[in-house]
Length: 118
Image (cartoon, rainbow, N blue to C red; front, side, top):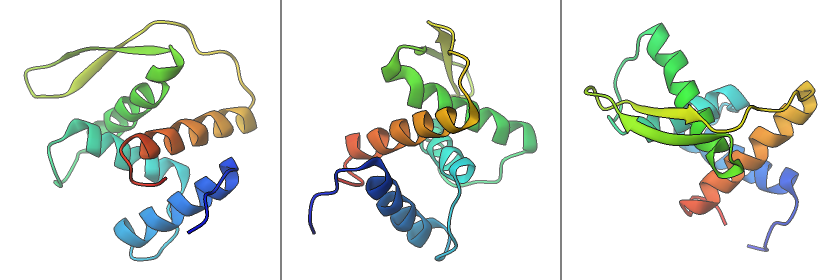
């Protein structure tokens, strides 16, 4: 396979690979991928999550994804094994399109770091 260089190429490759593995070919959206990262970061395996836990999983993922950018820092694990982060720098006010690009960049970097994609 040739090396992909653009964010769009890497994003499309990642979405295709994740969708095949986790959604039986249905195309996963940004929120679904963030949710998967939250489940991965929690590290408690596959199980049913309550609605509030799903929101917390997405928060965990966002904190983990934005940690390398200096917005969050890991703080501690609570007694139930859930990671907690503290805010280091406030997020800038971004337009929705800019938010999407930041999240896609951070997600691609996350999956490159764990060598899910190259």
